[in-house]
Image (cartoon, rainbow, N blue to C red):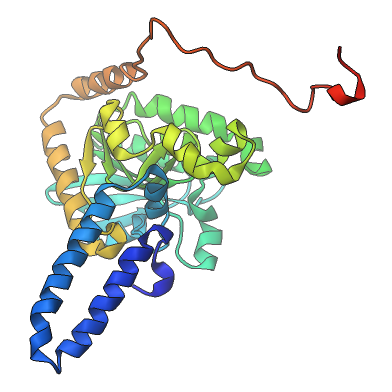
Amino acid sequence: MSKKDDLPFEASLVELKKRIEELRNDAENTPGLKELLSSMQEKGNEVEKQLYENLSPWNTVEVARHPKRPQTRDYIDLMLDEFVELHGDRQFRDDLSIVTGLAQIGSHRVMLVGQHKGRDVTERHQCHAGCPHPEGYWKSLRKMRIAEQFGLPVVCLIDTKGAYPGIGSEERGVAIAIAENMRDMSKLKVPVVCVIIGEGGSGGALGLGVGNRILMLRHAYYSVISPEGCASILWRDGNKKAAAAGVLKLTSRDLQGFGLIDEIVDEPLGGAHRNPQVMAATLRAAIIRNLDELSRLSPTQLAQERYEKFRAYGRFTVEKNPPELPEFRDEESIPDEEEGDVA
């Protein structure tokens, strides 16, 4: 990878790798350096392993947003045996931020639905950077209903910061479109496997997130709001995004602990962007395994299991002696005491 692809928290690792590369060049002409090179390479691998095993929540968000991270169309090329894309919602237009189509993965014929951000400036503009409009959700739901009609499992790849918040999107009812997707996905009589492959932001992710199995790549994140949005609301300071990421509990490890996802799919060392081919092979195996398991259930069992699964969400504990919370003070509405407005 080029230097511009390195993430801020990788600075020490990048410097170490630079020294290893310099030593490798010298070792070609100096046989005595080969043993030192081998030792340095082992150290580099161990440092990288420790770094990625102990990522902070904000570092996880940075990895999930890496510009080279595999997206839906990458997985289509690397993971599927066949794919025939299906376009449009038959109501308004074809939203390119959501890709749908008939696919073959292993022995399973499925309906694939995935969010796609785009790579270059032109594609990102066409895909709204992966933020669907209502017609994107109408498009996806139409294809899911077709899948149910023909008895095809549904595989959803989730990767979005959230649904598109523009005026047109709101005018056409993006909130209702998301709600209808969630309602109808909960009743599908076919297996549904959902995978958070990068960003899982807000209702934009939930609109494709009601499945029998919820899988999540290890360095993806899944959250009710972006860290920047949370920081702006709680502290009125978007720069406190790292602190917000910590309190949101958005990592795969946190969410598995809460019972909100079923399985963490391991990524190559350094993240999915380091080796997309290996990542695609690992994800392919996980999806096939879950489809094999779900195929043993009847249509009624699939819908009932999905219903019970989401009814069990929202577990909480009650403390006998909860800490006292500070009184909320709206600074804009409090008179200035120095001017004598209050006693």
